[in-house]
Structures are given as structure tokens and as C-alpha cells.
Length: 205
Image (cartoon, rainbow, N blue to C red; front, side, top):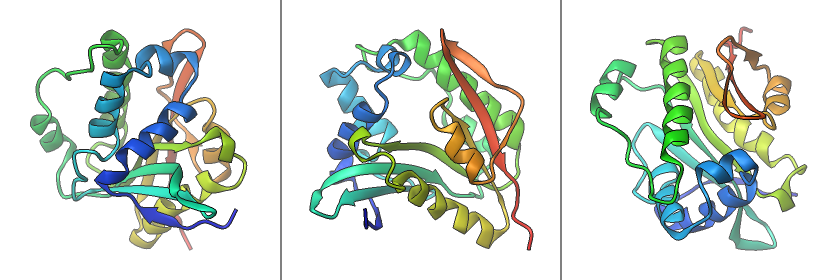
């Protein structure tokens, strides 16, 4: 499938949400974020790009060449920033506000643990962070996830920095094929589901 990676815009948020709910449809994700109107609105505004895109973040999309209006994959990259983890934490003080139909306790456990591991592992080191990557099930196996991944890896290599992510069970093989190493700190926020932390070292010539 010949399709280019493009920058997503806030107007794309509903289409990105369609991919999100199709790609993350396992029991864990549907328990945390059931596909209900208030959850969908929250996903569009907070997890995707419906509220605009901060300067240190890049929201990418891939469309179907035969139907350019159809988004079939997306990824959000966070670039190295002069804002430290500590400064970011101070800006984000206060409990998270989850949509009413979500499982707030599970959201707190999952995102809180994931964020804590990220801060503990990377500390103040500059790095690229892959926050989320999703491909519609109908378009999986066509190399789209690899394209979205390589966008950030190429820039990390150019800048000489590490790349960090927290992977679902399904995503781990892709990341291992692209040089990511498994770290300590795996956690199971939900029965039968294990999240792992991974890092890709600085590429040396």
C-alpha cells in the first residue's frame, strides 16, 4: 500500500478516534475506554489532537490512497524538549479528569504507572517518545506501523538521542524488530494484559 505519512490536524480527530476504537478493541482497552459518546469526545480532545497540538508533539496520520479522506493509521510522537520531566509534572499537577463512562480507577492505574516508569527510566535525558500508535485492523500487515515508527526513529538518529516507549503485547514484536530493547518495569494493569517498557539506544555509526 503506497501511502505517505502526513501531519494530522485537529479537524482529523474524529477520524483518528475511529482508528483508535478499531485498533484498541481488546478487553483491557474496552474496559478502560468503552466506545461511548463521552469517551469518544475525551479521546478526540485529550489523547489525539482535538484540542490542538503542543509544540513538542507531532501527530501523524496515514490515509488510504484510494480514499484520501479515510484515515487508516496514526501515531503521536513527543520530541525532545527543553521542559524537564519535573517541570512537566508541575504543569500537570492535580488528579486527571476521565470521561464519566470510562473506568477511572483503571485509567489512573495504567497511565499513572506508565508515566511513573517513563520518568524514572529516562529522568532528564533528551529522547523521542512514542506516546501512541494505532493501525485500523483492515489495514494491518501493510507496513503502516513501520512507516509511522521510522518517522521518529530517523529524527532520533539525526539528533543522536534515545527513543522510549511503553508497549502493548501486540506491539512488542514490531519494536523489537526496529532495535528496541526490553527494560525492567513491566506491569499488568488488567488480568491477562502486560505492558512493557522499551528503549532504543542512540544509533552509533
